[in-house]
Length: 153
Image 1 (tube, rainbow, N blue to C red):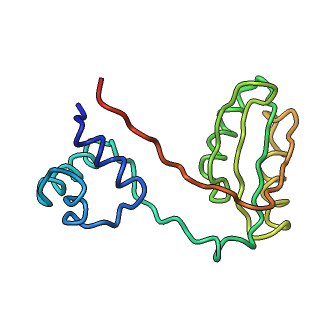
Image 2: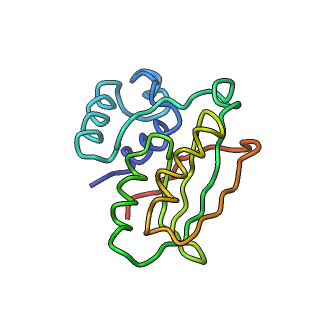
C-alpha cells in the first residue's frame, strides 16, 4: 500500500519527473537512495504508468486540435471503434462520458486534411457512430494532467 511519503513523492514527480534524488530529498524527509528505491517500486508496481515529455506550445501551437463528441449506436462495432480510437496516434485521449454524448476524443493533427482523413477513416466509416460533433480548439489556456493525492486512508 502507499504511505504518506509515496503520495508526497508522486505529487512531486507528476509535475517534474526529471528531478534528481538529491533535489527530491530537499523536499522530502528521505535520502536520495530511499527515494530512488521508492520510485523503482512505484514504477514496478504500476503506480507510475509511464513517464512522458510534454512538448512546448512553441512546437504545437500550429497544429489542428479538436474535441470530437460522439453518439453511438448499440452495435458490436463499438468495441472495434474504441480499439481503433485507442490505437490511433492522432487521438490523444478518449473517454466514455455521461450525458447526451457517449464518447469524447481529443484529436491532434498536423492540418485539416489529416483531420478529415482520420475522421472519415474512423468515424464516417463506422456503423457504431450515429453522429459526431467537432469542436476546434483555438487556444490552450491550461494543460495540467496532475492528480493531487491526499493522505492514505
